[in-house]
Length: 571
Image (cartoon, rainbow, N blue to C red; front, side):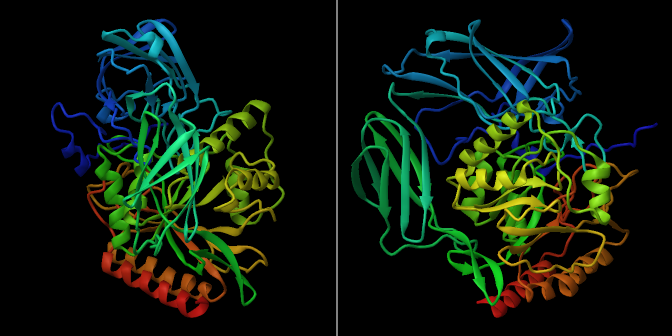
């Protein structure tokens, strides 16, 4: 069968990649910032081997995956291929008696790290960071760093929407390094992590690592404490909201270690009102007006060419009146969540699916009628990988005030023991909303009644004790000429050839179906989707981010109408 023709699409953010500039060179972990930082992104030596035979030798631009155009390689990586990244870095020998850490933001799916030929650690799993301590392997002067990676597309590991044969709602897979690689000096006794739990009056801070005596520097004051926990109350607190995303900076000093961070004051919960369960923000019923966000870009696939790609997605959707992004089965770099914190964009964070997908059982039958009774089996290896990844995702996003909601399973993909998973998520993080099963194959162990509606009118039934969320809907497709990745085989759920008709159909969907549902307790709706992605042409933005396909003012009017309707009904 002949493959459909695809078109190479460039984005405006590629202009940020000046000759010789280091991509994604800003500090990669804004909530735990030290003065010591050396970014290792940029050009590396790169080779690909298959069964011992060298298939490719050249240069690659890190952190872009080799499948992407921005990597400079743009080749498909096989399941048995070995990827070898190498580069030199210079070490002056100054650790002040401390340690030298190598941070790798993410490498899909396996990695093994060597410094000067010495093994210093490895990692399995394509979405989480890992940090080898390379102190004992480095020498004064030039050092050789080597990272060996492979991507067997092992479905016992979380893989998201990646596939060997992309098409429809499944996308080009990526391999190897796809987030920032960097070096950091730390004292021998250093802060490993912090955990910030906010409420409407202050924060509870938990510190892992560091000296026993600690100092918190906040608002011109110094607070000394011993141990791992501290309560900070804020005078005249300013609450974080999408309209006013106020952030409080602070510094934490433990002996010779110092980090800079920030927090915000906000809560999210549920409340019972007039026989309905509603989601709240800061104790007040709130409507989460959202978009599905896949996190794919036509230039770097898993990354935009520069952080501006993340930021403009957020700001353009805010200008259209949206206050929420559902980050769909993908974990982003910390910088993305920081930008959501900064600009006031709420995030529904999905866990990342694993296991075998069945179109018949997971999509076709439940879309029509079969929405109960299906569950997959998980091997011990898949269970461990999924549990480790979920735990890691929660650890990564916990301190970000923008993240308010977790989705564990999407449409039954890899779903197992849903009821038990609700309990696990609440143990990992009791402060956020848990959507155990988004779409179908429901469980009563969940905070929300989470539905997907694409081919029928939106007619949602309120369920006692669960907030009503339409976690996916719409999917209306329109191809913007000259900005389509796969013009011969577009994908969507209802097609329009005229932009104005497409816009009016989206508005009518909100006006005739979503607005009336607000009166019945609907407190969140997630439209599919923020941008086109490869074959999918149902985005408000084109895949290359060059065209905002909707009328921004018209969408803002819809947002205002939703807000007004919800305010009158429930506040």
